[in-house]
Amino acid sequence: MAQSDHVSVRSKWADAEFIRSSFTKWAISVEVACIGDEVAIRDDKDPDRGLLIFNSDEWSAFVKGVKNNEFDFFDK
Image (tube, rainbow, N blue to C red; front, side):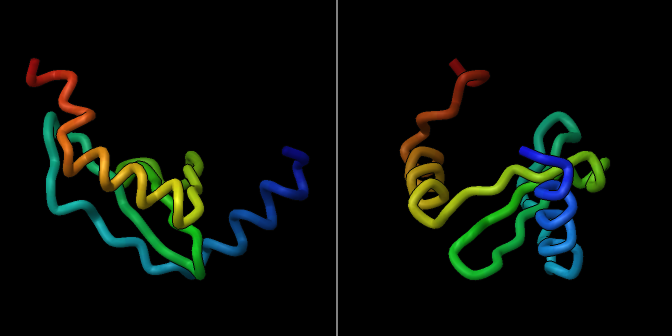
């Protein structure tokens, strides 16, 4: 991604309303925001570090996996 792409991504999400996850484990939590059909996730302790951005299909697949316990690596 070019430097100008990083600037445009940051400016797009600058005014987004990020919501902190209600579930935290090991003092790790994230914030999530939606704009249009995109979802952004960031570290709540270091919000300027960067964003992970997903389209609606990717986000839906992730949520489905969470609900199906596909990411319970530490509980096994």
